[in-house]
Image (cartoon, rainbow, N blue to C red):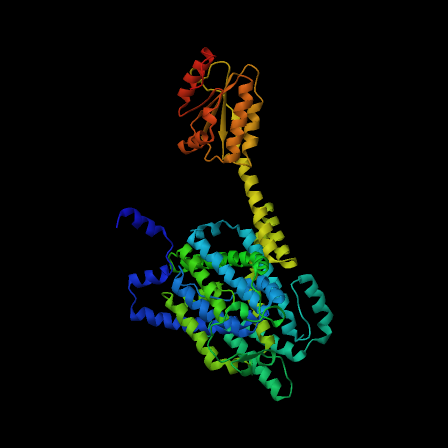
Amino acid sequence: MSRAPRRFQAQLPLPGRALLNTWREGYTPGKLKRDVLAGLTVGVVAVPLSMALAIAIGVAPQHGLYTAIVAGAIIALTGGSRFNISGPTAAFVVILFPIVAEYGLGGLLVATLMAGLILMALGLARLGSLIQYVPYPVILGFTAGIGVVIALLQVPGFLGLSDIALGSSTLNNLVVIGRALPELSPPDLCIGAATLATLIAWPRLKTPIPAPLVGLSVGTLVALMLAWGGIEVATIASRFSWEADGVAGSGIPPFAPSFALPWQLPGANDDPLTVDFALIQALLGPALAIALLAAIESLLCAVVADGLTRTRHDSNAELIGQGLGNVIAPFFGGMTATAALARTATNIKSGACSPVAALVHSLVVLLAVVALAGAMGYVPMAALAALLFIIAWNMSEARHFVHTLKSAPGSDVAVLVICFLLTVVFDMVIAVAVGMGLAAALFIRRMAKLTHTRRLEAPEPAAAFPDGVAHYRVSGPLFFGAAEKAMATLRVIDRDVRIVVLEMQEVPSLDASALVAIDTLRRELAERGVGIIVVGLAPRMVLKLKRTGIRRQAGRFAVVRQLEQARRLARRWLEFRSEKPA
């Protein structure tokens, strides 16, 4: 094989890069033991979280478990991070809840499939590194907003307000919850408060037993005690039911996930979806938002994992792995998945060495579904709501939010607050789009301020240009936001000036707008009999001028490398006014 194909192959994103690198470095029985123990720990944490997050977006809890099983395993096998644990995450609640409300489970799974294809395309196009350009105020703004929305959506479950239905409008949900407050259920509130207190206090004991497991166990025990006293509360078993192959039951079906076409599962109004262009068009916006958020969350999670373990991930392979997981999971009833920071950190702290730990985590969740589905049906809804309160608080990063408000520049604070408010009041799709637009506009404004043009005077007479020559220096990038401002200065020159020398060593880039501005300036000055000599422009930018045809046009226009060359050429032009440009 020739060298060129080898180089080409090395540049292609390789699915499963993390697993392959682990195998090449040598995988020992000791590492396997550590991975198994870490996977057991994370799997125990993932079971209650997966159920809670599925319920939070309005679908049955088993779909969250199926996500951790199928997507978690596939992403571990095909991703680019050794330590990422993937499954349902709180970040998607704000996006997925409106999809479920309008299109049902079928619409959710189709949107997940579309998002997976987008993620794979991003990875294959090697765009993993572009995610790092999402500004921090945008990320912090919409994550804090998501935390607020998640917490609001859990209030009915926490208070036992079972007869109200929430929609996608936060303001309307506030009104609905406020009107229903007199009907709150003291038993559900008692269970929620006990679970919440346990979840807050347990981590302070520094024990290896995960707080979600203990908190839900306490809430379930309180619910059982109330049931013995004849007081019934809402549980997974009382809220959800299932039917498969003529067998029906309540709670979570005790079966492994099975293959089914996503669009044949119930959609809006409990009917299968009709997949057509109208549906694809309607779900394209949410799918793009899902893909963007999944990419951001997964790659940020991988970066944090690299910092904790001093390793390196392959961002493009990770995007491909996340895409494959989200493409395949919907065919087994799994919803949107991405890397979860809390579960990944738990994985690392538990001693994980490779993606094998994530595979073990998926097997633990599968075992819980098959063997403990009946027991999980006793978990009260109020306890799950309390768990989601903690998730929402952690996701909001309230301390970082307040610190940024106090310390960041005013423009960044404005972006942060706008993203936060748009996420809470409208939705995350609008928040991210507006936030990115504002951040880009502010960046353009800041870069434009770095670009300026000023006239120079020679420090020594021997180095000066002859009379009739104006010497200017252009500094900073010439792009659409700054090119016209930089060129406008050159249009106001003295009447006796016959040649303008532009020193452009400090211009790092030119875009199409800058090329047009230079050509326009050349034409305007040529009409007045004034020539232009450009000095020090980088070769790649000189090539851009040639491609646009500026150097081939009529009029005195030349590009030279050194200032001394410009002096000699200026003298020739002044001495021989009739001579054509070089």
